[in-house]
Length: 143
Image (cartoon, rainbow, N blue to C red; front, side):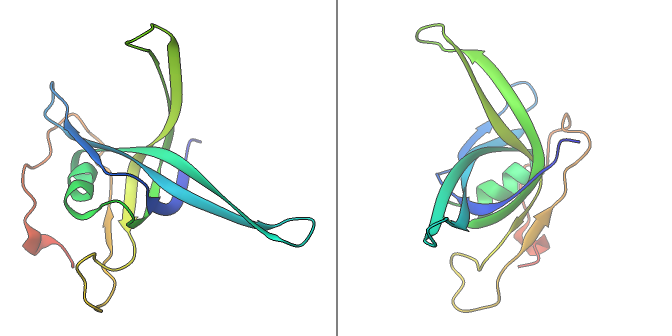
């Protein structure tokens, strides 16, 4: 089973693109995930991992419109391994990234002035080959 669940903050600006063949929106970014533990000497330790994530279709559109650097997010997805040749020197490159299947925005809206936290959860569509709707009607959103 290939399942990843991460809770963290968006660590860099979203890279929004439209796939040329299908017109599907995709978003690439990274999230920062913290791990805290107590060392053998009793001191508190913390490490931060930056994990690349990729969203397609409806998830990408919602992320583009409502998420930004610093925003807390819960991501559920699958691990993907990509390989390519570097354009400059032809060397082989690779990386792991998480393909977003579901996500939930956590914390309050960025422009929220003391109101209740806004939450939005999206579910993946089984067929990513059909182009998603081009606009989001804000009156349909629950926040």
